[in-house]
Image 1 (cartoon, rainbow, N blue to C red):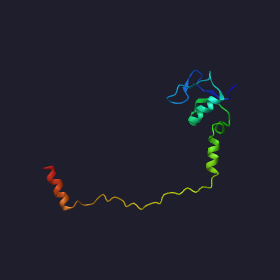
Image 2: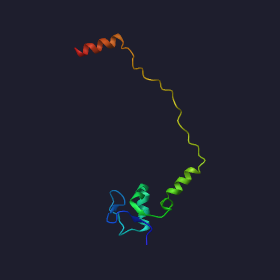
Image 3: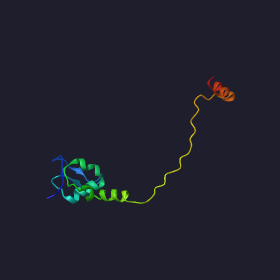
Image 4: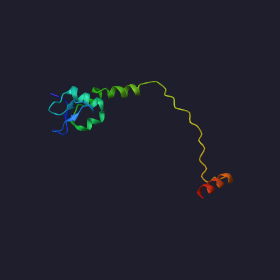
Length: 104
């Protein structure tokens, strides 16, 4: 007996886009559900029944713990001073002549 059950009983989902393998309540196994969720953990919303430790089963819980427990310092790029764009800048005389001669 499996610990997983899809919310919609008569629906068949593809396990992975572009592949032929499918998942449904009729062919549900724990291994197939874990494979389905490992590809996209947001798919948990498609299940009406699943074990409390589903994140651990797909390796998500372990990955989160590893990131939280790391002592690695992540360097952020140095911020540079960006000057604001001047919107009311006057056009120079030679540019003004060029733009008026092109429109004629």
